[in-house]
Image 1 (cartoon, chains in turn blue, green):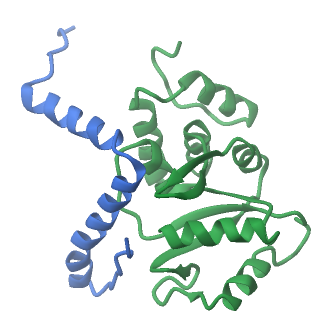
Image 2 (cartoon, helix red, strand yellow):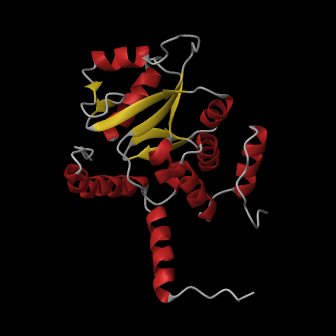
Length: 56
Length: 167
């Protein structure tokens, strides 16, 4: 059995980034959700699906 | 979002619903990293749960306030630009989850959200691909109480996902 390799710096940064996002206050998380909706808008529009980002 | 939470508090204060709690992706976002979702899932408990149309009093109350179904998601009501989907509590797990809902302050407005361990158990019960991913996200979270989650799964006869190292 091969030994587990430690996380690379880039992998660790990714994990830490997700932890930081999870630690944000809920109001900030809602802003992130709205930003994600905005970014999805043109992608969905290409498929003919119209989405409407929330008002903050 | 703030307007939606205000309206939910008014529905409780006005006796239209007994209690409510945010679930679904936004409920999970309360505990985990933000994920994209297009609606706000709200589980509601009624004083009279024998009605064949349990959501009708909510729709009537919201209509009186001028809120209409969302243009693109007619199963949701557009409250101040946030599509809100009301879901009646339909089983014992949801009833227990709602009775353990936690209150928090959202920019000066009170809000209630289902506990993380119950949200994960509901995801196990629902069992769609996105629910399985959500369970994995909860299990990877440091603040998630795995023991409590295992207890809830056992109480409700759910197959608890493999949790190596549960203490």
